[in-house]
Length: 149
Image (cartoon, rainbow, N blue to C red; front, side):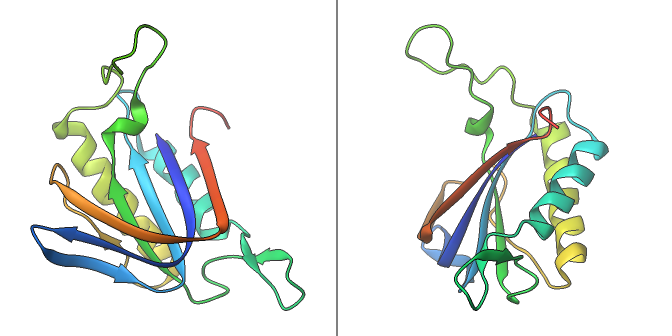
């Protein structure tokens, strides 16, 4: 399972011209699910995401988590994070899990992250054509892969 976490001052997901989720300060999380991913990958990444200290304290040091700053979170499924780019110029998505596996793991990740931060997590819609807008604050962008623990 791979995630890209972006610290944002605002973010939103729009589907078909309708805003599905929006937040002010917080995290925009892009999530890719692979064939070998399971509940242990969710546990690892949820704990890391909820506790990641990437928000500034009163001295300007990145020492606070999203819960410490009462920030919002949006999680968007993004199978392209699983792209393999070793050969040629066209990415292969063979490592991405199919809908039958990816949707339940994505939904469970969102549910557990919501529990971990103590508030609802905004989402996109799995497989939909989404327009994701964000203002990356910093910029701060963190990439994590549950296979690299």
